[in-house]
Image (cartoon, rainbow, N blue to C red; front, side, top):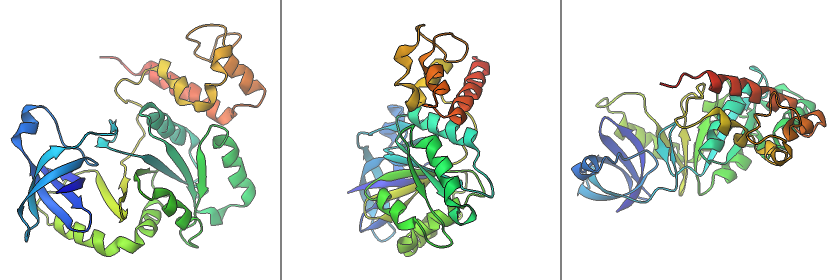
Length: 292
């Protein structure tokens, strides 16, 4: 039987099998010997040990499409990052930090500005002008009025999406609105998982419709993704790539060097100054991370 690991906690793996339900599984010892750890998001083959109790064993982990380091999950098709349009105003440094981490891990991102009832259209257009030229899809929602929720939902169809955003932006309300049709199903999942046996901080995937899952992601304030060096940073700003070939110096940091294609594009208004200032701040931060 095939399914997806939707939660892993204290050596137990909860596997969602489409149309059948959630099975509480242990992983066979062979994985430990091979130093393979099942991840939330893995597609797995399970052997059912007790159908009535929904107990099983994870027998095989199917090949992974990708594997994220922060958070440790696999087979992510897209990241949806949610910020409020106002109250609180969007922290673009935090947003760019997340975008860089996802670019580095090669996960496509959609940006969603929630609470659009608090701002006028001109503010939303300002936000779009920062991120759409960089190649990002920008969506708007208001969970109070329901505006944009069905558009976001159709975007999630057939994908496993990691959802992220700081506190106070209405992320929980939007996640609830997106999974309104499967509340019953997720309630059953919660009963099975939250019996008090195993409680700790964990990643969890929520089925929202057939073959469509969302995963709530913990914070993303640290840039300390293993293998991420300051020299990689410019490649995580997609709008820089077009202008980098015009830099005079190989390995240009796009900060202090003369004859820099990226800085020329910035002065011509082709690159957002908000994005460029965040690039400089993140570059300094990566430069100062101690290498042990």
